[in-house]
Amino acid sequence: MTNDLRDLSAVLREGLNLEISSPRYTEESEYTYPLKTEVWDNWLPFAYRAFRRIANETSVRSFASIGCGSGADAIGAMCAFLDVERIVVTDVDPRIIPLAQRNVEKYAQSRKVIALQGSLCHPLREAGITVDLMYENLPNLPVNGTRDLGSTYDSSIIPSGRKELADYLLSSHQALLRDAKDRLNPGGSIICSIGGRVPSSLLREMVQQEGYFFQELVCGFKVQTEPGEVLLGYAQAEKKEIVFDFYDYEKAAARLMQSGFPFVYTFPKDVSAEELKEILCPYRISAQEALERYRANENIKVGHVVQMIRAKKMD
Image 1 (tube, helix red, strand yellow):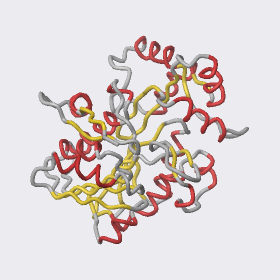
Image 2: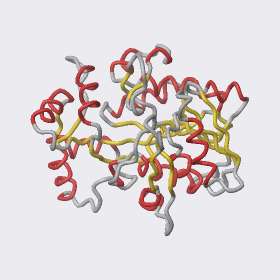
Image 3: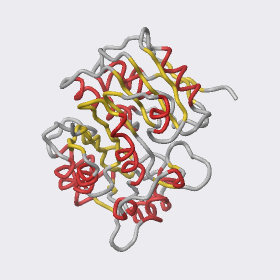
Image 4: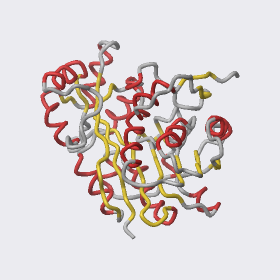
């Protein structure tokens, strides 16, 4: 099957505030998460904003993408971190690795690109690699069986952890934090890309309890893509004391504009996810209600908060 080509240039411009005049094409396959036409329907620009903030604070010479997909996050890292010398891309799916390696090497110039297959930090450990910065956008929804476009993961590869984190579908993120400590250089960090559908305080507790300093780099708001598949997964995980935060997208976006935010998608760094959720509270709906609305009208838009959080190694 012929792979599709997608142009990353608009996402790089928006996320990194770069002047990019020529296309930056990357390959996609049926096994990679697809780049969306609307820039801010993707996770990438939020991640790129987080990269830019880290780049303004410190030098990054080695970078690893854990669960790299097509490698688009690593391409953004090369644009953000001008001193980066080594890029590592890993994924649990062996069908993705050659494609990701081709995409990243296409724009790597003199940088060294290492592509490894395996779960979490295991391939880095086996190769004896440590890095200054990791980025992960691991899936939340568990499924036993085949991986489905990056929205689910095989729960058999994730070790057991704190029950509340498992209930809120954060097990993959906790597992990565736990597994990464010996793969980070002194002062190294992990950027965790997480849909803010869970209590913000729980993310802080997770990072700190795993022995890292916590920092919120970026918070934002985006439309829920693949709503039929994703909303079903979250609705099935809801129970009396576990409810996920979704929002009526159109009403929430209008409220943000009325509140004086010039941009609906990302917000000044002095606006936290907790403050954003307080603004959006009147339009909050559960996953079950969001799924019911979507099934009644598939054109309806559901939104959720995005959080890019930094877990910095305690030396």
